[in-house]
Length: 392
Image 1 (cartoon, rainbow, N blue to C red):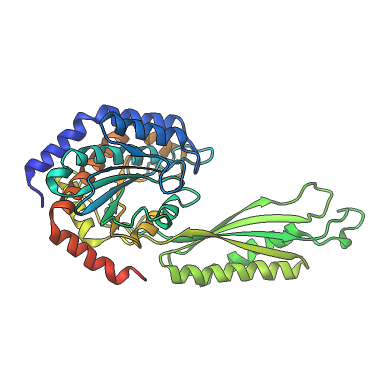
Image 2 (image 1 turned 90 degrees about the vertical axis):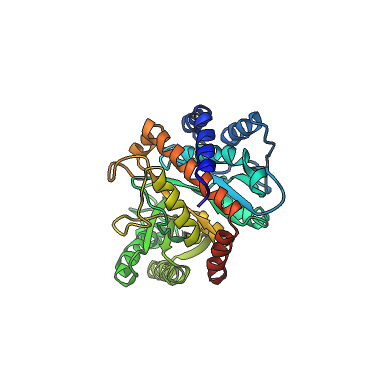
């Protein structure tokens, strides 16, 4: 563990800047922006870093709303990641405003001590977590090429240090039928909508064969143009999720078979397009344990995981296949009071309790990053665990 004096200095730095950090969280919350359009959020983050004397690269990694602020260019390199995209209609009902501001708070504290720790620290702003996989694009652009470890936190209704996330893939299915007058000549038509709806029914019939933890859910995006016309075109989208990539691939194949069977039954054509999804999260054990110790020291003892609660998906999972990484969950409300993607959770993301938890997360991340920079044994342990799973 790093010494108490360094912990005190990091905590004090975050406390000193908490007014600016909370104001940043309020700003982002009040102006929600969707994937790859987070222009104001990325600008506000850059401006805050620059006010404290830290130059910011923006655009970064080929993405207009991505950014990076970095202190130091030698020695071990740790990165704190910020998310700041919002949800359609629901705004920051996932608390990304807190993720962004908390990451900035941790970075500013670490930047003040990085030189004496002999390493470098980056704040990497990652757009489009909700849809688009900004982190994946940054990985492909080489943004994590010299990073030794990465971390972020996510708001939740309980504190969990190493809760798993699900690998996910998106499928878009477009059915092409034959239009006809629905009353005069329904027998001359082939309904794309019928095939689309039958796909949902067939998928439901296969759920008994899914492993525990698998999630398959879909929406109909287009189902016809007029009630008196046999629908010529229908479009649906499915998300397939699982705790591991192998099961996700198996279930995805089942969903695709259901769509083809439904199309055949209705004598229509179907075109299936797979969209890039996210990998499951591989929380690095040694780093997670140190984060847990610092979180407990800050008055927030936490479980590693909780099988009683579900989980979602994140492109931080892809980062965890690239470098040792953690993605702890920090409570901004009571257990069961609200969960991500609910309107109540958006309210919690701009509450005093939300801000307090954000600052605790920033302190725990700053302490853990400082320890990674100063403790080669911790870095070696993190790398040793990471290597066997890197190509899994």
